[in-house]
Image (cartoon, one colour):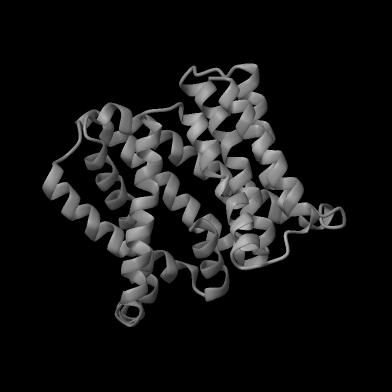
Length: 266
């Protein structure tokens, strides 16, 4: 799913409206969920706000990065750097230190994912794109960490997920209406079917991630989540009959090795 809507944001010509297309139904679903399950514990509210701030920064940085950078460079670097960011931040702020095998597994997974973007002739030319993609990855790490902690202390995981989704949607939608005005409404009315489908998928996918972080170490979930980049490549090969290529094959093997190391560490 990540790869699909990143591609849409890159090719749409208006990343802001595409984000709104996804967030509007997500917020509506979240409002219904809150009405049913109730609010989470107040101690989790600051974490939901922190996550919303991280997601807002992530959204605008991603739009900015795709204005100049290619999808096949920005996407794997951003997603590949996120697990490293989570590992670093969880050690600094939560005191969660990784074992040697865990750290090796996360490093290998990140290298495997980020390696999809590597090309020897591109490195020097793409330093600005690299920095933009890394900043996107840092924002992913920040909101992931906030959500992992917030969900654990919420006493109501579904309520926390819904509250966080509402908080993270308000800034994006507010900016869209301020900058685009009526165009935003027209766009949503025109694309409402895609909006509903995308919103349901977005809510469900990240709800699963947050719930998983209440059961397993945040660093593990963060790393395994980003392996979707590799799975997308494998699905493309098996189902869509796209050529695997040497780079994809090596990256998939490297990521699989990292997952095995993380499994052995438990």
